[in-house]
Image (cartoon, rainbow, N blue to C red):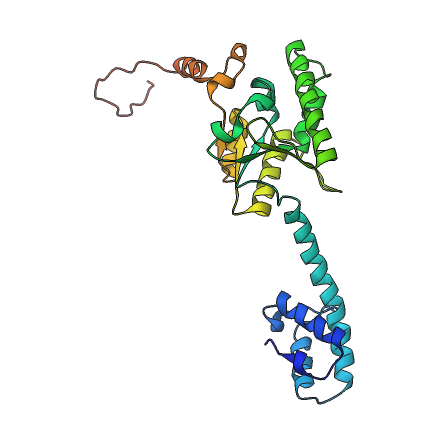
Length: 274
């Protein structure tokens, strides 16, 4: 029930209000107005069209002004959300800490070529930045702590570039962005869960552009697939050889759980016991 009330004698402000509301509302019979009522606005619109009572305008104005402000605020929040990602390329690669620590330095990997084809945006979630920072000084392998410090130095360059120039690009043209937590955001207890949840959130915000989770961690892959997010990883040549990852090590791992089963042709179940 969308009425063309702009043509009725009324102030320009009301006309502009109505024009904006018509763009936001598709079914006036389902509008919950500023007083929490459903159905009152369509009744008032009918009365206004018939010019039955001048005071009807006052009530309609009261019910719709607050509703209008609320709808515009929701629209503004949505635009803020999608506007933050307007520079993202058609392909968006969300990377985890495992990748940053077990591949060669991320600023030397041609992400736009090795993980799909075409220009891409490499996204580093806020929680990953903090995880790398934590690993740089926490108890554990000295090797990993040293790598984490190196990665954090590179992340510092990215953050500096983003703060001064608003963008940061690698040598192959891949854009790098840090997916910062929104004010008041509450993280999930597990970092892997948080990374995948942020990737899923980002996928909703930038669709139809495609998110790909970049990880070699089996747990992270499984979580990405649970959220229907594709995953990928750079070729083995970008892995740090001493870490025991890659196709050769995968085949060795699979060999450790493989046995030769005789081809006797009898696979029927037989109970074992007295």
